[in-house]
Length: 312
Image (cartoon, rainbow, N blue to C red; front, side, top):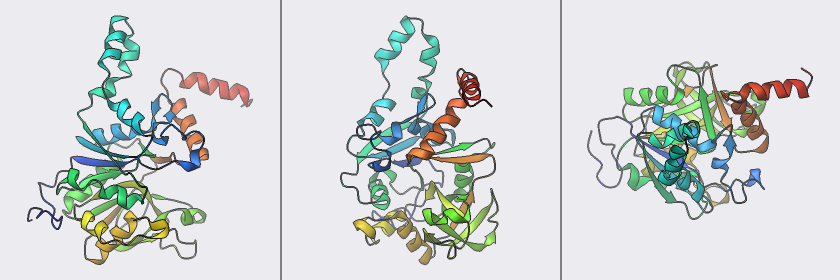
């Protein structure tokens, strides 16, 4: 395969996926007033902020370089992943080793990079800001307000990366099965004839339908906040016209790739995996409770409190 010619026409490299982009520039208006000055990606779930779970997921899958696409009032993200040697020294000298252990995420084998999407012009525009960082390679997109919790030996993201490497130049979208009554909330997959669209399966993608009605949806497989993309997505984004509100949508650019012959695959969550969307108050409350209950030190106490409170 030819190397990138400077305009992104070809992918280059050995097919190994090392880079990821985390779009985290959204205003979080559905979470106000929580997000007036606090990035929604930094909201706590148990004892970690949302975005830390995502970074740990990426690191576990073998990603070594992460670019955060941020916006105004998002400086807390950069501060969180910046190693605080003064704090760590103080904790060590005062014998607070248990608290020091909670900062072990600073030792992940990951380099962090940051750029801003100064004007909110859609997810596609945000991803487009990563072009120079990606530099011709296939890469992961992980939305900064969605956590994928997995009890599988190989996580959803690892399976997606395996599929991408097995068919070089293709794209892969993580998906989840949703109730028919909820399909209008999501981008939906139209499966092709190859593969299976059952829970945990892999299927070739024929098309993407944005928020269809229950009667028009081609399946119940919804896009689930994880993508593996070839470098040529940047060319497609440049040729994608703005849609509603003047925003450039990633889904529109992916459909352009499909029309031009790029193969795409859906890899879906299994019954032992769950997506947590931290984009609205209801789902945030649910996620907070689930992660708090899993806390090794305090989860049992919380469970007992809930049993007592609700007379279970």
